[in-house]
Length: 283
Ligand SMILES: Nc1ncnc2c1ncn2[C@@H]1O[C@H](COP(=O)(O)OP(=O)(O)OP(=O)(O)O)[C@@H](O)[C@H]1O
Ligand SMILES: [Mg+2]
Image (cartoon, rainbow, N blue to C red):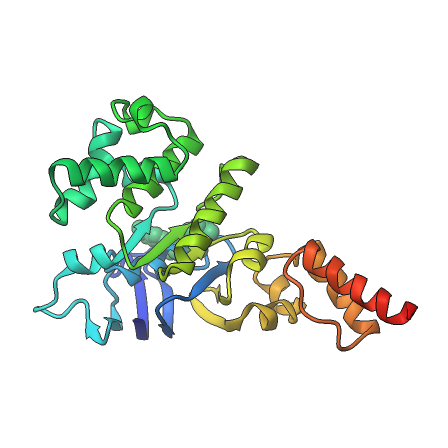
């Protein structure tokens, strides 16, 4: 379980650029949750998630993993990062190695994998991300296309088998098929017990994947609750620079007419409920 207690982060302290990026945020994340982090450009989303695995140290407050402050002198940040894996917003910021194999094997190697077990972890992670491992392992990660880079960045995190997967705008730059595949993979991983935290500007993704939404505005947490509650507050959605998906707009129009109309996450659910109502009124 990850917990932030009254956390603040200020960049460029002591310079004319000094500016708080996270302001007094407290939150708790339990095992197995699916959390979407949303907010306008520059609102503090990337800063927030980098607190979760200790890449950024708070200026005030505490970050706890399973009840222990991750920045205590006796805490092991390497272990924290084994447990909480983070895929960067821009894959190049994450890459350092000369080959894809080296890149993806860095994490598992660091955490004690070697020989066949290491190779298996790397090949499995690349296969999960839709690659033919043999075709890509010897290439430079920097020479890949944007979408390939993103998938290698994700592979290098999942290869370490983390309990929590954090992804910063993971589907940006992916085509429809790659997006769908990634979303299915992440949902599956979550079903098998992994906690999923992702930053996104795509409201359909929030609706489709998340069960909880945390909205950030100007470094402050301004909403933290269920997807249903989030989407029933259109003013709030607009205030964080977002637009509800068409399905949600349609569902709320139906709710205006039929108060008991249930919350639907996609077109299939909506059609199913419409069919039931149709059948009900026809009989
Ligand atoms: N390394 C840094 N040094 C100085 N300021 C930074 C740094 N990283 C982020 N900031 C500033 O902190 C604020 C929050 O940035 P952050 O990257 O967390 O926002 P974001 O919500 O992820 O934005 P985006 O949607 O564009 O990715 C911004 O004002 C940004 O300019
Ligand atoms: Mg960001």
